[in-house]
Length: 43
Length: 229
Image (cartoon, rainbow over all chains, first blue to last red; front, side, top):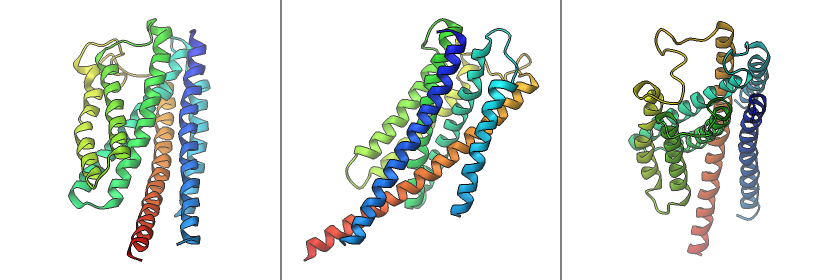
């Protein structure tokens, strides 16, 4: 792995990990909100 | 409050764009390593943010054991998860940087090993929270967080206490340490932007934790109502 390849890989990996985590959080938010709605509809 | 948080997210995105520009285009190329040294501007701020998150986790755990309030437990859970995410970035970007510079991906020196141990401690913490059944989960998690945090200063001091493959401290490491002023400026912009990303993620994760607790409480209430009929 050359220097420029390593630099590119490190920056891409950082963004992939951060965006992946953010995506997971948003998915969990959506799931919880749906559960909340279900609970309100069928208490 | 919501508008303030949205404004903070916009500010963080702006900071991220500017700090990445500083790291890639403004900071001068390091003479020995070349462009690969620019990994420093993501690697070190990620480690810093992980440390800040673990400190929040430690303080929230102490407050939880003292006051037993669910808000501090939720903050502890949120900060541990976000800290582990940043620690993961450190453990991936480090070897990517090491390969072209040292010729190896990994070595069991004090800094790398203690960082891996730190990551494993917080993986255990999150697994304990996720899979432990019974009413003592939060107390056990808080106790583990307090003991686990001991590794944070060890990671920080490891390059001062031991002779390591990992470089000596760039700042505050004695007479021969220090950074070029333009590099230092790029570094501080990235430190600031990564800290803000950490705060945004912690706030989001904290809100999620509170919502999940709310849903669990409602499910429990529904189950109780069903049982009493």
